[in-house]
Length: 470
Image (cartoon, rainbow, N blue to C red; front, side, top):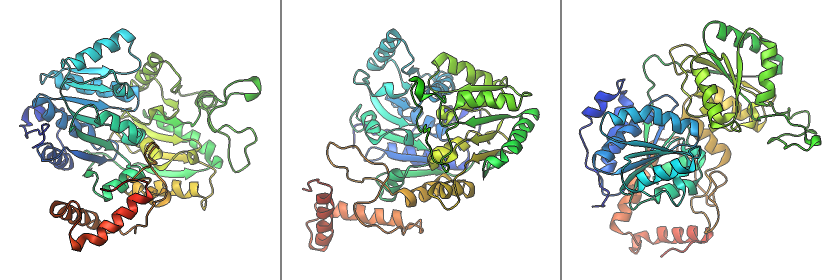
């Protein structure tokens, strides 16, 4: 048995401390996790569920199980906003259960970082929530047991492996609302086990999604005003921070092209567009938020928005993850053709978190028969994160299964070997995985005569990837 084997525990105290009841899908996912933790091999599981389906509660149950066994848990989030929200939600929950939670982000002062890292290294912290600050070599754990990666598509493969390498035989749990192509491909080939959280909490409604062009601008502004006047709130996401002037020596924002062709509209910038929108709709309070703002400034804006003091928040993708404002009912994405399916699905998940009807408007000039047009149409027709990821897989490819040594791992792109997209049958991948495991259990070196062709195929595959097969 592995040293990190975690026996299943009584979750009654944890469940009693939650302010809500779990859905059936959450209960199934937690059972999957507990079974993995007590298994013969370290857990490697993906929690796949749309935004608001309750992945964090499932991860918290996993953390409770591991901490009860005396091990530490690390939870890595892609942004300080999300890390802070996790800390705000989970710290009081686990404090009441007798566990200490600490927060480690880049915004901490050097002295506070040193203090937190000392608590982690000495074993005084049970749950460690943080950003990429968790990946540094001076962040060490006294008794690591489980690593959790939230919004895993926002991290590179190597970043996730660094976190998993903080201890021996660590259990790994990753969460996402939209698996990126490589992750989906790994699921199909059973490198990851998966739990689907396919139920939304009672009262939640699907977010209606539409693609419109500039001819709808006046009508859209009227709809924004109507939502705010009815007591709701609105997000407007722009791909750039500021529309700066390259002729005056200022930094050019990503994607800015003064000579852009007519079919590529200029980028909307959060700072400038917030002023434009305020002038167009003077009856509502418009604020803006972007990643270049100081941590305190961002927190102040988000707090004001959460309190309802700001009716329309114009932002960059910094609000893609971690913001929970139930009164927000409208998401507008400017230059929507500039975003990938995963990002768009995440942005859409910022609304519809309450019981009121919600909408997502994709503002784009992309032609319907263009790749961008097809991508946006896919989002309009699909709400399931898995279905969106499957379509993304078809469009972009699964990336590298076996990257070349010393090179980064592509998370999308063409296969280096042929594969059939026969996964319209959801029963096929698990059956194939079971068959592969049976072969491995009986003949791990593939030396038996009946496995000779399989051995040849694998050697050829690894040779193409410049690896050596023993």
